Length: 189
Image (cartoon, rainbow, N blue to C red; front, side):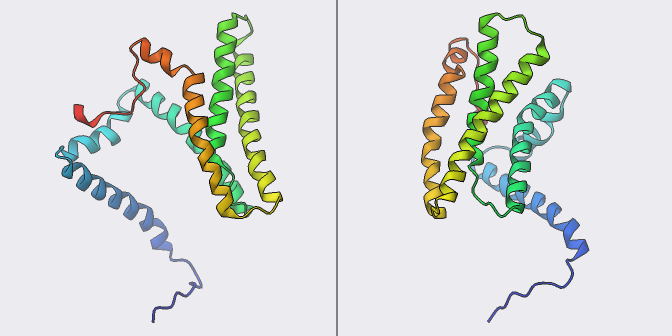
């Protein structure tokens, strides 16, 4: 019989080696999947690892996409350390995007001549309030003693929120203008 025992002291070398092993394993599995699709694994992996760092604009795009994910991760880490496990981070992310993007669009379309820093502050504030409103739903469910499996039902609310966000933030308008917001299409590789 296999018995798991907690180590007295964590392994120092495994602390450094495990992230490297996970990255290497990710590349190996990704190469196998891409190869099974009939594409060149080295070309695809270079598109995902090297191309995003090819110039100032590309690095800016990486930062643009990574910043919300990093903020969600920091919020989740804080909550996990507080023994709160399900806080609805996806909903907070989407509702924050709706709030901040909606405020930015409204300020742009009204033609107000406020300073730029005030626009950014207002958009960030509304995004934070919208995300906090979604978190309040999860907190209310937790305070009412709802079981964890019931909380996962809140994922069902994600589809209406996602489609509302894409409609509200003007996905249709960008497609009519010929701007594609789809992820990288591997057929072009």
